[in-house]
Amino acid sequence: MLTHAQNLNQTQSFFLPNTNIPIFLTRNTRAKRITLRVHSAHRKVLLTLPKTTSIKQAQRFAERHTTWIIEKFEKLPPFVPFEHNAIIPFHGILHKIVFCNHKIRHQQIVTIYKNQNLPGEHYPILKVHGPYEHAPRRLLDWLKKQARTELQERVTYHACNLNLHPKRVAIRDQKSRWGSCSSTGALSFSWRLILAPYFVLDYVAAHEVAHLAEMNHGKRFWQLVRQTMPDMDKAEEWLKENGTSLHGYG
Image (cartoon, rainbow, N blue to C red; front, top):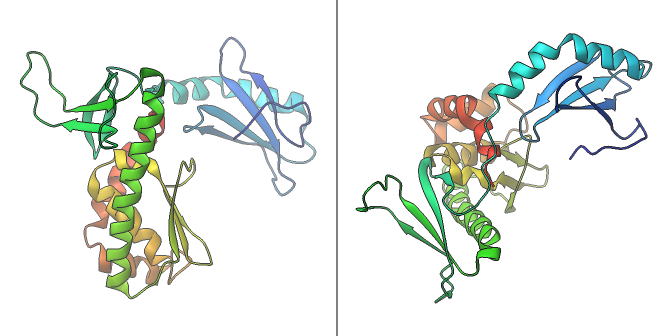
C-alpha cells in the first residue's frame, strides 16, 4: 500500500490544488517519462517519475491533467463499509446486511434469507449474528471462508480437467489482480471474487489453473483456459465492466 513518506525513494505525496485528491510520487530508474495512473482499489493517483525528474515538474504535470484526474475520480465507485443495512453483492446478487446481537449457535455466523415477504423489503438478507462491534469482521471472515470453499472446488475441477496439480490455494485481498500462480504451483485469489457472479469466480479459477502449465498469456495458455471454461468470454467481459466496483466493499 502506498504511504506518505518524506523520502522520495519511498513515496511522497501532495494534494492536487483545490481538491482533496492525493497524488503519490514514486521513482522508477527505468522510467523514461512521467506516467500517471488512478489506482481504483486505493482511490489514489500514482505519478511514476524518471530518476532525474524534479518534484516541481511532477506537480506541474499533475496540474496539467487536473480535469482528467477529477473525471476519473468521479467515476470511481463509492466505498461501502460492512455495516448494518448496507447493500453489498454476494454471488453477483445484491444483499442487505443485517447485524443482530444474538448469541451464536452451532458456530453459525451468517444466515442467508433469500425470500423476503416484508413490505418494502427487496433484497435477500445476510444476517450476521453476534455482538455488533464484531459483526463487520465476522462477515468478512465468513465471506473469505465461502470464497476459499468455492475456489478450492473450482480449482480441483479445472485441474482434473487439464491434468494439472496445484500445490495449494490461498485467499488474500489482492489489489492489482484477481488471482495469481507462483512458479511453485501455489495459487492465490482475491476473496472479493465471492461478491461477483459465480461464473466469474469459476473463470478466474480456470485462468490460474491454466498457468500451472503455461506461465504466460500465449496462444497455448488461452487454449487451455477455453478447453476447461468454454464460456470464458462472458466472465472476462464482466470483469472489465464491473471488476473495479468490487474493491469498494468492506
